[in-house]
Image 1 (cartoon, rainbow, N blue to C red):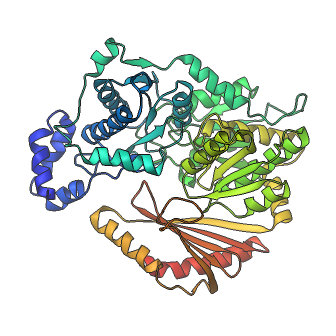
Image 2 (cartoon, rainbow, N blue to C red):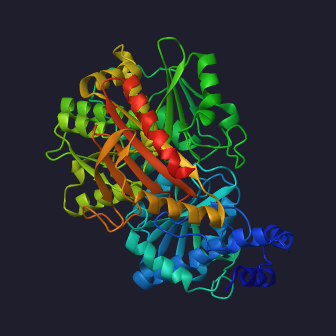
Image 3 (cartoon, rainbow, N blue to C red):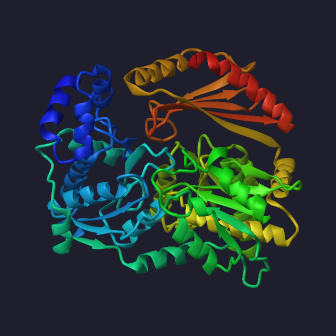
Length: 562
C-alpha cells in the first residue's frame, strides 16, 4: 500500500477524532506532508511507541494507540490464563495522555482483560511497581519522557515490571503488523467498561507501599546524624513527580523544601522549558534562579514521567553547577558502597549494573569496594532484566545499584526501571550527610577524581527528521562500519560491533571504538527519537587535557555528519 493509498484509507475511516480529521483534510494536495505522515508505521520496539502527535501511521494518535493496544491484548490473551489477564495503566501530564490511556484501557477491556488504572497522573516507576504489586500480565505508561511537548509515547512493561524484552517486543510487533488499523481493533466504550467494573482504580495503598519501598533504600545506620533542614529547591517540570517526590522527602524529615511555582502543576505545554529534560541547562535555569534567590543548597528536577533526576549544587562562589548523569551516578555509587561497608550491609557478591555508554570510572570505584561491574546495552530495561536474572538465581540482594549516563538511577529491586523518586530521595540524603560533615558534593566529586583519575564523558546527538533523515542515518552507520584508523589523533585499537550480538547481549545497532589512550567512542541510533547519538569517554591527568582531547575527537566526527 502506497503512502497515498494509506492517506485515502484514513480519509475514509478516521472519522472519530476531529483533530486528526482536520489535519488529514489540511494535507490534501501536499505530497511531502502525506509522505511524512504515512511513509512508515510508528516504530514499535522494546521502548514501545514514541512520536509526534498528529494524523497518520507515523504519528501518535488514538488510532495508532488503539492498534498497539490491540496487539498487546492479543499477546496477553495468547500467553496468560484468563484469571491472570490484567494490565496496569498510567500516564503523565502530556497532551492527550489521558485520552490515550482511556483508549488503551477500553481496547483491553473489550478483549476481556481487566484494567487497573491510576486515578491521576503517576510516574513511570509507580507503573512498574503497580504491575508487580498487582500481579499484572503487563503494564503501559503513556509518556514521551523528556521529549518536547509535540511528542507522546506508549511504554510497555512485562509482568516482572521491566520494559518488555526484545523477544516479547518482536511477538507483539507481529501481532500489531497483522492488524488493519480500522477493522481489526476492538474499540470498546471506556465509560461502559468502568461501569461494568472492567476498569478500576489502582488502590491508594499501592502508592503508600511504593513510598515505603523508596524510603527503605536509606543508607543511614540508626542514630546517624544528618541535617535534614538543608535548603532544597525542587521542580517536577510540570510533570508527575510533585506528589510522590515531595511526600517521600517530607516523610523522611526534609523540612526546608521549596517547589518552583511555574513548574509545579501538570502542564503538557511545558511553558517554561520547551525541552523538559533535566539533562539540559534550559530546563534547569528557572530552578537555579530560585535556588540562588533563596540561598538554597541543592536543586532537583525530574523529567515529566519522573524516571530521571537532574541536580545543581552551589559552589564556593555561590554559583550553581549542574552535575552530569555520570557525575551523580559516581557520587551515589561511592556513597552507597561506603555506607554499606560502614554499616555491614554489603552483600557477599555485590554488583553494579550500568550501560556500555556510562562512564568507565564507575568500574574503578566499584572495584575499590570489591563490587563487580556488569556492563549492558543502552537502555535501563537491560538493568531491569539483570535484576530479574539475579532474583531468579536467588541473589537479588547482590544488586546494590544501577545507573546510566542519561540521569537514570535505581538502588533497589522493588521496581525494574530507573526511578526518579528513589534517586531524588537518595541524593537529598547523601547531600545532607556530607553537608553535616562539612563537605559539598563538588568537593566529594573532586576527591573521587583525585583518587581514581579524571574522566570526561560527553554526549553528542545529531537529529535527522523524516524519511530522508532516516535514510541518512542508515548511510552514516554504514560509514562508521568502514575501516577507521583514528579519532582525534588517537589510534583505534579495537572495534566492537554489537549488530550480530556480543557478550551474550541482544543484537543492537551499536558500535564501540576503543582508543589508544583508553578513551572510547560509541555510536548508536536512538531507539525513541530520529537521532544518532555519539558518546565520548576521555581519560586524562587533568580536566583541561581531557577537554582538549575530546575537542579533537569531535572535530573528526563532524566529517561523518556533514
